[in-house]
Amino acid sequence: MIRVGLVIVVLAVLAATLGPALTPYDPSSQALAQRLEAPSGAHPFGMDELGRDILSRLVSGARISLFVGLAVVSVSSLLGMLFGSIAGYFGGVVDDVISRVIDVLMAFPGILLAIALVAVLGPSLTNVILALCVIGWVGYARLVRGQALRAREFEYVQAARALGAGPARIVLRHVLPTAFPAVIVQATLGMAGAIIAEASLSFLGLGVQPPTPSWGTMLDAGRSHLFDAPHLTIFPGVAIATLVLGFNFLGDGLRDRIDPKGQL
Amino acid sequence: MIRYLLRRLLLTVPVMIGVATLVFALIHLVPGDPAQAMLGETATAEEIQRLRTTLGLDRPLLAQYGSFLGGVARGDLGKSFRTGQPVAREIWRRLGDTGILAISAMAVAIAVAIPLGIVAAVFRGRALDHTAMTLALAGISMPSFWLGPLLAIFFAVRLGWLPVSGSGTPAHLVLPAITLGTALAAILARMTRSSVIEELRELYVLAARARGFSHARAVVRHAFRNSLIPVVTIIGLQFGAVLTGTIITETIFAWPGVGRLLITAINTRDYPLVQGCILFISVTYVAMNLITDLTYGWLDPRIRFE
Image 1 (cartoon, rainbow over the protein chains, first blue to last red):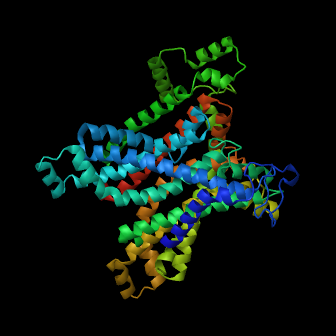
Image 2: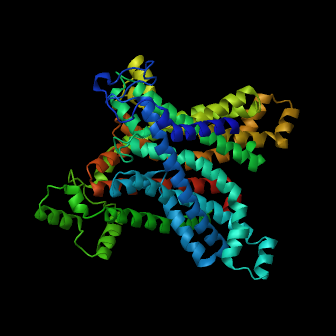
Image 3: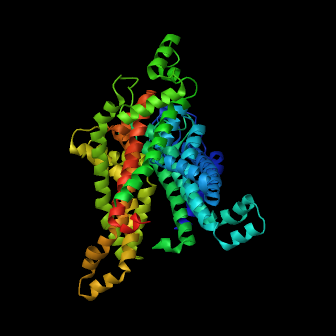
């Protein structure tokens, strides 16, 4: 499974980086006479409601999805590791404050808080990334806090402290590395989550705004043409599901490698 | 158990206050003047000032916060800017539809996931297990905003068996419930499989077999029953995902619930209604988690004494 996931992810990255140069059509150019045209030899995935080539727009949309995923996972994991290790290592009041903030943010189910934030900040790609980071760091912080709580009792950490190492050095050199494998698994699965979340927000009209091609907005546009042009709905959905499945395969495979008990 | 109950209730209070505070802050995160944003570019200064007074935005922040918390405690979530109706009443009117959808989705998920999880556990490592678990992972990866339209294309447009959208008859509920229940079914099937495998390793299952019980009976009557605790917990904890899922599912199928109300409120910049819906969904989620925790503590005494 891990190999299948890796192949899917590598193909998506290649499509996102090389694809726009290889596709024969501009994702924004319109041929209104060909609007809603079914898949054909010239346009394998057909044309959308404004006569734009769906394949070119999907390839272009892959960039948005991967960019959002990467940005959200990078910022969230860094913030999560920072606050999680501080809470777990120092404990006491610092831990209490950070843990209560985590509790409050976790009281909002799924992407509800992201929906709320984008609703008030206004729909845009930047605000989507910001909103997803606000809810995203919490999972990493909880994970790293737990690891840091355990790690601070390890003998080699106590030895480092006895040798005069400062808190920053202990956290960076001794505590955080114990959490890295779990963080990497969470980040891989987090890519899948961020891609779905961005597409969900764009589908609801709260994410990337037209004419920028995003898989979520493409699906939203397809809703009005379920009867006459179902290909508008089918292909963007296949793209999202395949990429998300790829990251889930990869994340699950990595988890099984790191924690064989999880293979049960 | 009473001490455990009180402790859990006390722990919930600061979380609820935190949630209410964050929801209160939402309207103040609107770039520029929230009243201007709600009324649009063409509004006059007088209209903006009138709305600011109506919403209490011209009062000191602390006074606004106090009024908001007091209102929430009394169940008063303010008035909708567009309809003038109390927000609580708007939510209440749609609550039944969201409840029916959420419960139906959970029923679909349980009906599919538990047999699938048990079969995968019993045939662990074989083709049936791999197929079931690949299906489960596909279910998790398939976004509801794609699955819903796909089901509509096939069952409503092509076959004409079910309505594309709307509400009013049981037939209207089928596609939204399947759409919303699929991801939960996938998660539950994976959980049921792991849990049943754990139990199948226990000696009491071997003892049941030694006493002459059939393999099927040993699995269903013994291993499965004991594996239910984590499964029930996951069902409770996944209620939040179902609640958020209703927002998208109700939008796809024009289902008249709280989720669709929220999206309509966002599109019309009805911020008091947005705040009310967000607060309502979050509080329901926290309450469901609390009930799950209490049930878990009741089922497994070790949790209570931790």
